[in-house]
Length: 94
Image 1 (cartoon, one colour):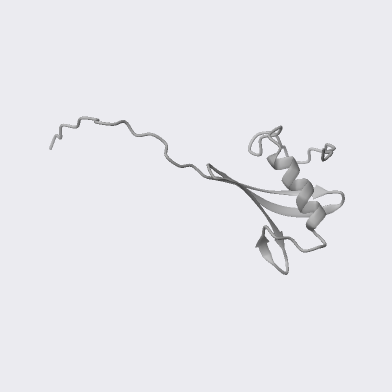
Image 2 (cartoon, rainbow, N blue to C red; image 1 turned 180 degrees about the vertical axis):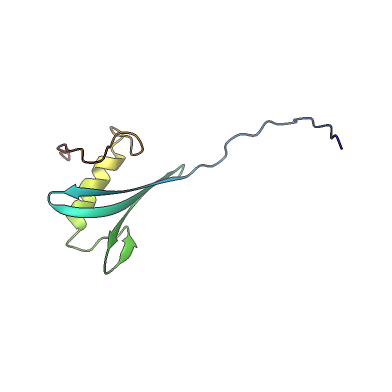
């Protein structure tokens, strides 16, 4: 069976969403994170034993969350490309 197809309007991207997952050590605190990007913005989730995956961290993890959010959402680094296992660097929140 052969079908005749005419493209009236070529397919185009109308929505995308990407989630990156990783583990960083920030100032001696190990944090598992999921960083989600889509056309509506970004969301950062960290894993805390008592809370599970959350974007509303406990007081103990609040500063670490803020540092991680600043680093990942600043636009200077690409979450999917700019990090390698065992890499070390310094980050300063401006």
